[in-house]
Image 1 (cartoon, each protein chain N blue to C red):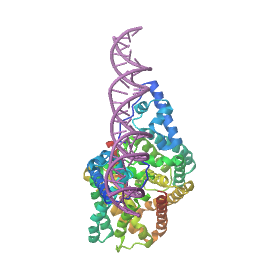
Image 2: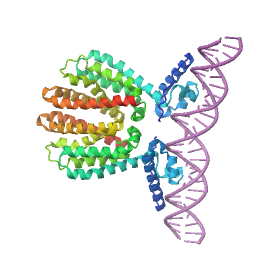
Image 3: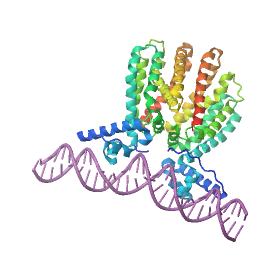
Image 4: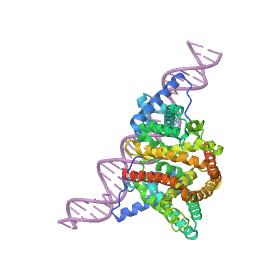
Length: 237
Length: 237
DNA sequence: AATATTTTTTGAACTCGTTCAAAAAAGTTC
DNA sequence: GAACTTTTTTGAACGAGTTCAAAAAATATT
């Protein structure tokens, strides 16, 4: 579980094909059989390739999972774009994006826990704050930037600047809740989204009130602290 | 990593001794060599006992780690009691308790990540919301109950009732930050604690304002949602 | 085309967590 | 104290992730 060996870049057409084959096989198996059943041996066998060969292209099972993250984010992004077109208020946009996130994630509920398990280790390349997942994370925050942009709500600039990142954090929290949610149809998570989006909208109004300026400044300074930690993390990995 | 087999209760003096020996050996090795190096084989060998025997008393490596959690909480609790005696304001108490938490945790920084990694899997018995860790968690929340009790600050009852749990959640957040913090002397975490405690104190005052009642009610309803999820989790495991 | 170099691929081996049947030891019953 | 039951202990085995030296195939060089 330690391996941070980087996945070998391919130098050959043949290699390219093999790598792609292994990846697509892995994604499919992860989807259909879950994490535990998708052993490296099974992937290799299914792809008609030796075990060692799979390791030649993907330094560890984790690296294969990384690719899976990426796929999920792509799907969510594609699903979200039309909603951002259609809705204009921040609240409506956020609500739509969050619901779509859960819908996108839903097929993988069973083994999402395992994913987030490996992702929680600060030394894991899968940790959402680590260097390896920086691209996916950046893209993910970018989605919330789009969401905040061109919203006419009166939001002070200091808050507006941090809002995308704050919403990203919020979204991670919801995903965490969803992982633990075993209610029918994930009703609980959807309810939580409804309530939190509502609350967030109110809190943003509140925080935008000039009287709140001191508290707001103080809170935003904390967020800055968080971000500093991230960049430091990214360098370490 | 699946095993939820319960650890066998011992029925014999000899067994009791063996179990204790294995546990203390494991704790020592975890402390001195970290998580990865502390293999079940190494523990067994060091304790002068067969591998199978270790598994007879502890259903999995995770069970051994659970014991480790427990130890840490005990240490923190003992360190905190005098501080609660001495300080009377909520702010001062919280500050002291949080700092002591980090001090208690500090020797284990290196492999804390791995601990929290396994703890993040909803199916793991180590997950802080799962049934297996309920005792430790309850004790942990209890500490914050004591902290809130006998505080003369004017806090509405609805908030006061949820405050211990909220502070526990907050404390988990700080621990998460600490895990990722590689600054010298963990300066960042301590700074964060100073700032957040300050902010929390102000937020509690704010939330206690009668004008805030509707927002507060709404927010507390969310917390209730969270707790519901927990009890449901606990039943599932 | 022959040779040298690089890349891909293999298969065996190693480690570690975990399981299990059966041997050894301890405790119980008569 | 002998026969039994229960508990403890062992050691071998399995499955999974990972590593690595060396064979095979592809590519580059002369």
